[in-house]
Structures are given as structure tokens and as C-alpha cells.
Image 1 (cartoon, rainbow, N blue to C red):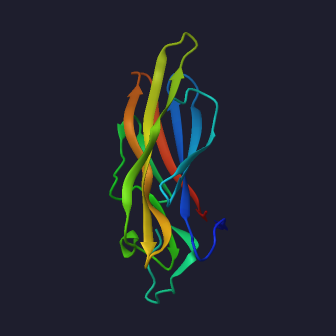
Image 2: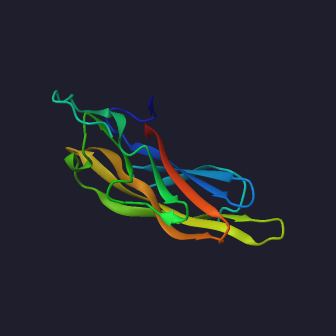
Length: 185
């Protein structure tokens, strides 16, 4: 259930985007997770990242009333960015957003800005001899500032932009992206 940190008069939507990077092959499967909060005012905050080498619902025929003070998620909650060493990210459908309750498409809002992007982060797995087995580098990206008749600042198309993916011949790299609960900041 979403948490409301803002006010009904000046809502600022936000969503947590979580990246899970898994490496497996000759050695056991290992997964590392990193989370970024992206907000409707264009700011972001790096959340929990594990220690390591880190550099939609169908609309109903009965349209609900739009409530700018209640932030809900649109887009995909979970998707694969890399599967068995191959990029599978489709930025036209693989994203999340935080919009007012009752809004089913981000295009119902106006005044979008961005896209904004974070610094580049990476996860690198090495064997006991220090040889690089897999590496995944990415940036968090999102559009921000969308409003409903001048009210609120919301987020859309939040996800990842792949910078680098690498897997040694014996290894398999999988990357899953998940959006967590939308929040009104």
C-alpha cells in the first residue's frame, strides 16, 4: 500500500526502482540488488544497495475519479533487462510510473520534463583469482514533473538504461528490474 509523505495540495509522486543482477555458471549463482528512488520533482536518492562492486492493470469501463493526493503505480512492476547474457529491455513497455489515482496513462498528465538520469552504477562478479566473470553497468532514468491541471509532480518511464553487460564464456548474466511501491513525497 502506498505511503503518503506529501500533502493533497502539493503531491510529489515517486517510485522505487530495484535492479537485481545475477551471475551463474561454473560457480554458484550470486545475486546483488540496488534500489533508487526517483521523484516527480526530478530528484533521486540511492537506496539500499548490497555490498559488492557497485560503482499494468487494464482500465475498467467505469473510470474512477482522479485523486492527485493518492499516488498509484502504472507500467510494469517487474521485467527482465538481460536474460541469459542477451539484452531483452524494451523501453517502450519496460518502465514504471507514479501518477494520481484514477490516471491510467501517463499521457493524461502534462508538462513532463527530462528524461533525468543517475550516475552510472555497476555490479561486477569475479572468481577467487580475481578474473572478471560478469559485469553489468546501468543508469536509472525517468521523466518527471508531470502534473494534472497544475497540481502535483509525478514520475513516468522510470527504469534503467543499460551501459555495459559482459559475461565470460562459461557464465550467465541475468538482470531483473522491479518497481516498488509508489510514494507521495
